[in-house]
Length: 521
Figure: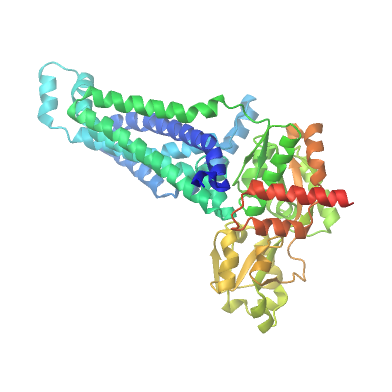
């Protein structure tokens, strides 16, 4: 049997035109913008020591910022700028995905280009520039006809470095909504689909190496003054870019975009919603790996059309409420708050996925810990792990305040790795999810929140403002509402945790179970 007949490899290949095309598009645009900014700045600053020091210093500082953080910082910046332009000039723009990714990656590309340009121009033998002036050349003629041709090989080395950096860092643009080869990696990590992770890493590495070697061919051509090498390098790069970008430009944009957050359950539910829309004749695709705040703003601004959120997340994290209310009142209040953003709450799916403190059942029984209140007396000697959001969320602050929790150590890790960590004793307690099937697999227990510090987390379907009156969308999703109970969702999540099944396959299974349940009623 061929390797690529395996369902996971086949699915990875099916996504390649979309992911690779978008990755090339954002990388090329960012690199072009970075060159357009850094090259003139380098020329201006080369003979101005103070300005040169400032520019290189700022570019160096940018390099010290982790790539994911830099990309994430540009999203709220663009969001604020879009709001200002809408208020002042009557038009806005999308702050989601492409634009913040391009700007952040362009900044990332500037240091090697500026540094190599300045260094190469300063390294030219003064006798050559004096000779140029001696034959009557102006400073501009000396720069364009003597200095830049001599400096080009070193400048190209800087461009090579910038290109590799941009291509590699672009894989981190997935959480802000930019489709890239990072979609393989983020989706694979969440669903433990190691084929996706490996495939994404290999394609990104191959792309970076191929581009680097073609730029090296151009660099060597400039060094030995070979027009053939330069021409061949440029032609091949252009051909590869055209081949990678062609599917992105020729493929029609899907009418419906389904959003998903950064954990397994969201990938499965997004795949399920997309399948239901396609089954109803509505073209749909998914946009995965989005942070909680990013995905809500994307919905409000029409960058995605539908996604599943949780009542507790909206209540505490999005709308910054601190008090608690009964489930029905909380949902009614959330519906009112969503209406202020013209967002429609279509309905509940039928299960709750709340944050919960979880530990091994055997150890909890040994220590007589059955609730968070019981845990408080032992917390000072224990370590706790949570996902990347948890310790910055209002729920954690409320838990600490209500129960007086103070742990010896706090650790953050990938959400689906937490369960194995607590089961093996790497940490003592985790902030898990009540709908996660790994709780049962690892013999863990959920500690009772007797003081109700954590709000309800009903899974609810949200529609973008432009889809508020979309009858076809509503009809396609209505069979899901109220038909996914907690046991069914736990089993789906368990199937997605390293069992070799894709989110699409699990979504198919989930729909079969939903259909069977509806038929039985």
